[in-house]
Length: 264
Ligand code: KIV
Ligand code: NA
Image: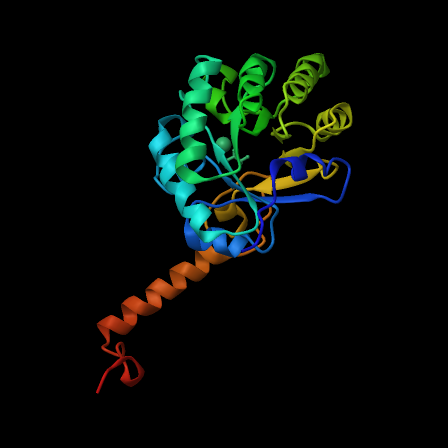
């Protein structure tokens, strides 16, 4: 059996070659990502991507655990990190530990991720002191979109930089093994990356981050319109449509099933 990459091994990659991270929500997609990535994130983006929800706010702990179990079954080498969904950790360090422990115990994943900087530092410390590696997530934090006032790039106003720096330093000092930096200007992402001793994983951030992450479906071209920070490395959306259209046509004209598909 292949030993999995651990959270401390990722933490040790600060300033090293870039960390490759992608999301996955299912066993076959995890199997496809596993040979290429060091980190697989079971992101709460699965609420929109898989379940058709309008935002991540309706995602439950049960959904994260089910998809986390599938991703663990499909992968063997990458560190699997599971997002703590909205409402499952913000109340107190104790609530965060109780629910994160359930995620770890029921999935076998190696770490959890939660959104928030300085305000979440006591919870990050509480979890890491009790055996749960935590990936932090700062900058544009989608679970706070209602208080942030929408999906706005953070750090355009340099007056906000000290708060973002304080967030990055607080999560690093609290023991986070890495931090996702989402939706910030390149200059701020570079500043945050040089300010902390843990790897920064960028999404809509900077090529100078210690790693990059994208939503798998977005980069495969399965998500339709995507934000500017996504590069479509594949074009599976149109290809999927073509394949389904070809199947429908073959059924209608009785060319499927053909001789190769029949038992005679
Ligand atoms: O939910 C998610 O997929 C994420 C990544 C985009 C960082 O949090
Ligand atoms: Na997320």
